[in-house]
Length: 282
Image 1 (cartoon, rainbow, N blue to C red):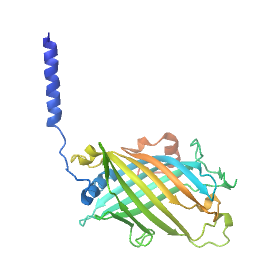
Image 2 (image 1 turned 90 degrees about the horizontal axis):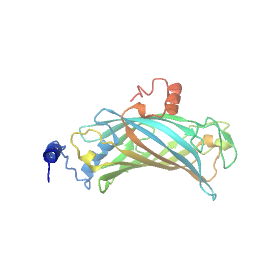
Image 3 (image 1 turned 45 degrees about the horizontal axis):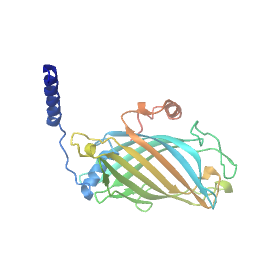
Image 4 (image 1 turned 30 degrees about the vertical axis):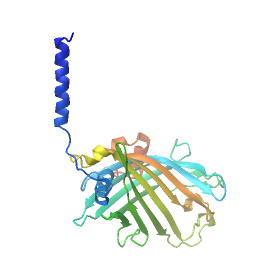
């Protein structure tokens, strides 16, 4: 026999469900199979809304493939990046990015200010990185660098998408190739002479829930990032012109504040770049 308490509880439950349905978010009704809608989804997944600062924490590994030897994980990486997106009237998306990161030992225990390359036993001084760059995306999904910049249309080309949807998740790639002409140097140590050009591929995938991408009330869709690079060795790795390749395998997610940075990484960032976390300069 149903009691009064059970009847009231059921009624309250129905009212709650009805309330949730009444408050359902307005959908953007994006067709993610269409280029224009996938491009719009990308802006929500990548950034934090027009002119606002998005923050990404990431970590991962560095792999070497030297000649015909067995590929090996040699280091780990911890980093943090900021991004600010703005849309021009013609639909061009200007992406300003600032990031900083550190190479760590292979086990990820500590930042490696010195490191022994396991492929030649050379003692190296990793050059941790801090950089700013501008990426231009266009409604046709093409990617390039800023005209007149180091990564202009002659030195960087790529594209966004296409989107892939499975269940309640959507994935959108952001892939490009870039080349950098190295400044001429005299009396270069042969073990740090990698040639005159560094060329690599940046292969990223951003993932979010379809419901967050479609939610018209959200400027920014929470999400994760997976990244791989394909390129040659860096001069400080002291492999010279040894045939082979280096690969980064990173993963991370968009965060709400710098409080998501682990204490050790945050302390080192504050020490090396005072004030950068509060004002990354973009």
